Length: 252
Length: 268
Image (cartoon, rainbow over all chains, first blue to last red; front, side, top):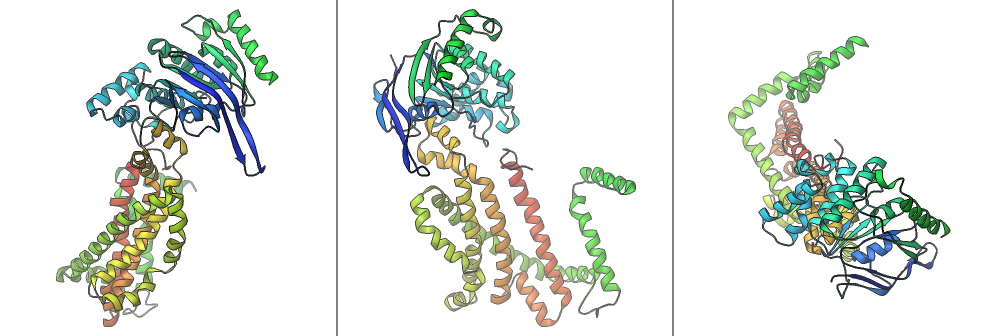
């Protein structure tokens, strides 16, 4: 079984303005099993994006280790897909070519890449937008492409960095529901970074509360699936979990 | 104001149907002013000929085959020089833009040589290569090179970090991201560099032709000065302007429409 293991992970920066070392992440240990959906929630500056960037291999860890399937993470790689807050679609590629990028890099034949891309676009209801350029799409559609592009590369773990923070509230709810649906269908391993307590609880099987670079608490979310906002907004268990997480976040 | 607005909306509608009008109408007042001043007899006709004389001389020079020949010479020189300047400039710009060490080592040298303007090289080039094609090509390549290098470097550096990271986490190697991310991301800036480079190169070419002078539009103009033919000098000037206009409308603008503007990297 492929699992992601963070062991005593830490990150310190040198802040040239303060003239001192700043600790962004301190002694974080976390285990994420295959097919799990884990949210990491915390206020801005708590180090959640730093953790994600280290798992993605964008920045090196100062201490501890990250193991995926027993192998140490060293630099970015296709087994760890990333969905960015800013979408980060290639503006010069059509939607189809954006999604087909991962398979193309893997060296699959052109027809195969296109087939995979079309399959995943259909999964997010984007079949009609295949030939368009990202700047011709709404923010919500752009991020659907961002999610699907990462999924089409079939990563072992999908890292999502506040992916829905820059779309409007209604679209965000739709995207969240779609994500839970896609997760149920495909069961990718997901680590989802957010500052939104409701979002964290709604999506995940497990919520990790982060504060000042440390894990404050891990909370299991045993809510049934499929999850929909209509059903959960008034759900007592959902509200209780949100209240519990919110209290932890605010106490930090 | 109302009739003027109506006139403008008529112009907008007609020029939407016949886009060619947009490149002609703005020049009408210029030509009219020129004709009026020439006809008024303010200046001796030989020093200040009117539009008609220039059109006549255009006809004569085309008929004799001089203008087409010279035009071809100038355009070929510019095209060869620009192609060579870009072939050198884009890779150099990518290198300087991506690599800190290359930037540290090359940047001061680039700035130094940029300051020695193209024309300033002519004296020594004439001693080395004489009145030859080599001299002219050197000047054009030199002129095109710097705007392309500097703008490419800027373009490469202004590609968002996230795009680079996205490509890497989708499995692209560092080398692959240069081709897949850095070059297309820098393309709008490369186009700016090309635009500047072509503009400077065009001027440098005319200057070189005037000094090195065996053929070309610059030579035509300088030769006309020797013969005291103001008409031909004016004709040369107009050809220069027209040619630039055509390069822009038929080469640069279409590329920009198909790339940066289409991708939303540049606002229309």
